[in-house]
Length: 293
Picture 1 (tube, rainbow, N blue to C red):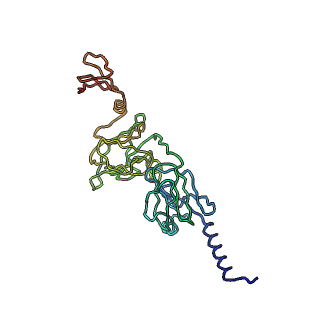
Picture 2: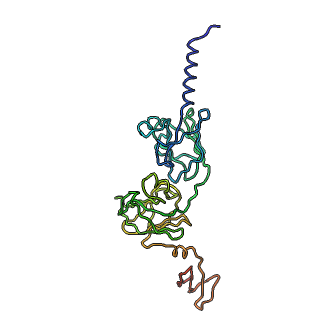
Picture 3: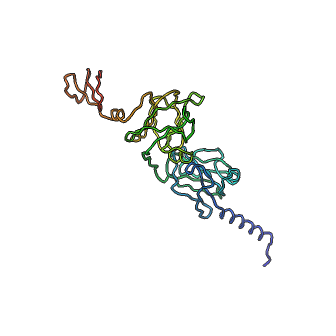
């Protein structure tokens, strides 16, 4: 049988290229490790499909992929895969196209995810594996557009703790666009430490006004409030809400707000279903008069 040398060489080249593609390593880094590519995690390679499981992300969490580990960002970006649009959001459970490039990949929401990368098909799939628990920290700090160490995580303002509620006075200096931005975290120091212990608005970086209650969870997005001056930041871990007010909340006002209202007529007799008229209302340790029409 006569051998076709050209065909044999072509098959050999394809085999070498295929082996090289499937044999290379792939590493993941991102908000979960302070965006430190030198300490990225190697993904498990199963016939060219790379997998990592149980990676926890907060709100706005994102990640990058590279075939090397290095502290040199130029080297990382030259060997990197991601979305064509930087920091575009992945759709949970859907294989999405990636390109050779430096675009970050944002997870759909806070949670624990399994991530699958197929470099032959050039796709990434992000699947939710569980929920992120929000534990009450021992201390809570505020940093941002403040009069004290603007966005310096080492000089963050520590809030007062009463039960599972934190509050404290801060002076917002504004960011120059009519808003003040700030972050809260269960630690201070460098940004890697802070971001690993940080909380963020569930809806992302959206504007809110004084006394508006904003739901939060674990994450790195900033809080954006239309305020400048001396105010109080109040954080309730029982209800996972944060708000900015002109007066401190403290635990007593939270208890009053959550306590059921009890109605009495002017003779001091409790009324189960108050109708039209003037009543004495007791809610927690607060007593007031209320006219019901």
